[in-house]
Every structure is written in C-alpha cells, then in structure tokens.
Image 1 (tube, rainbow, N blue to C red):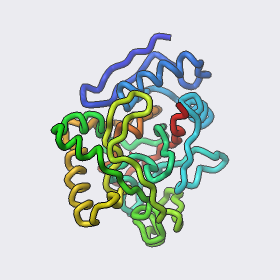
Image 2 (image 1 turned 135 degrees about the horizontal axis):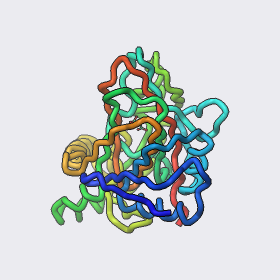
Image 3 (image 1 turned 60 degrees about the horizontal axis):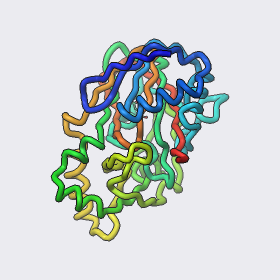
Image 4 (image 1 turned 45 degrees about the vertical axis):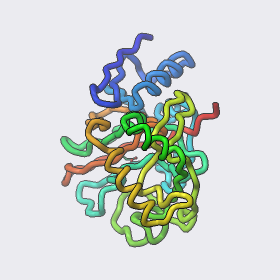
Length: 280
Ligand code: SIN
C-alpha cells in the first residue's frame, strides 16, 4: 500500500491518505503508520468512516489499549470514551489546558486516538505543541539545568473530588469519574528521552505537574509557569481542524495538546482511545 503523507508545514502534524482503516490492518501497514507517526507526532487520517470496532482494531495495531483512569467508557465498550459537548452545554470546556494525557500515571499512554463522530461547522480545533522542538530551541545551559529536574505529576487539580472535574462540576455531558486516587503523585523527569526515537522532549506541563522534587513550591511554580509559556510558543504549535470521519492519533511523549472552543450552539463528539505505553 502506498501512503501519501502531507506534512502540515508547522512544527508537527501530517495528513495521511491512501489507506482504508475500516479494513484489517496488516503488520506491515501498522509498522509504516507508526514510523510516520514517530516522525510527525500527530497524524490526521481524513475520510475514514470507521466504527468503534475499527477504532479499537486500529488502537490494538498501534500498541494496544492504555488505561483510562478517570473516564467511564461508552456503553458496550471497555476502552472507548466519548469526548462530548452538547449544543446547549454550559460547563467549562473539557481539556482547554495544555497537557499530555494521563502523565500522572506510572506508565502513561504512548499515544491517543480521536475519531470524529459529530463535528461542529466551525471551531473546536485541537492544538498540538511539539515538545522536541520546544526543548531543542532552548539555550544549552537551560537544557542542562532542566535535565537535572524531576517533576511531580498528579491528577488532583483535575480529577480529585475538589478538582476542576470533581464534585462541583455539574451539567457536563462527558462521563468523567472523580475520585480521591487522583491525589496520588508520580515523579517523571522533566526532560524525557523519547523511548522510540531517542529525541529529548519536555514532558507534560502545568495542570498535571504540581511541583518539582527538592524545590520550594513558589520557585517550582514560577519555573513551570515560565516554561509553560515557552512550551506553547506559536512556532511549536500545529492547529488541527477537524473534518467528519477523520481519525487523529498523537504521540503523548512528544507533544502537548489542548481543546479549543468557538462552536457554541453546536454539538461536538469524538471517540477516544489511548495507546498503551511502549513495551520496547
Ligand atoms: C482531549 O484532550 O482528549 C480532547 C481534545 C479535544 O477535545 O480537542
């Protein structure tokens, strides 16, 4: 099969055509897609009228299912969650902050897949920020310093009962699960060598990072805030525009992502799976 790969022209992202993802994915095709994915970090597959069986089969072929601790799956599925906003919904937008999915787990997911189910006529773009490019563009001295730091990750600001999606979050149509286990912490190096490409990337950001080991909270927050501005500079960002029947997969180890609004009065639904941490 010959795939056509069209890079976005931004720091990351490419559009891939010349394949039919509703058909079984051979090992050869899976390896080709994974290799294009590692290079471009975010892949968009337009015109793929897939159902949830095909989405699950694709996720399996890309590395198997990751664990989704704070989403309830859609009915009849174990691994598919709905990113959903009803047309009249008033709750704050879901995932409007830069993040790397579930970075607070001991073994966070390698990637995430999102399949367009119901796409508004405009708005609802997803932004991606290339963290290999963000790290590479830092002065050498700064890189050396950041390499020495270990970040403390936690889901508490988002998913603990007192968090953004906790007990006070009413009227949301997404099936988010809140629970006290979100207060757990997990250390990860602030700069991680990508396990498959070997390229160093800034890993995750404020929101899921709640401190830095051995650093006073105020100092850590100042550093993380300054770094967060850098991580999301325009030159590192690809703005993804959704189309009906489009599948997107991104690499959580090398990009941050965030949702955007601008589709008030319209319904938006995407089906999401996570790709398990790489086994090596
Ligand atoms: C997500 O962070 O999983 C959702 C992104 C989006 O809704 O665009």
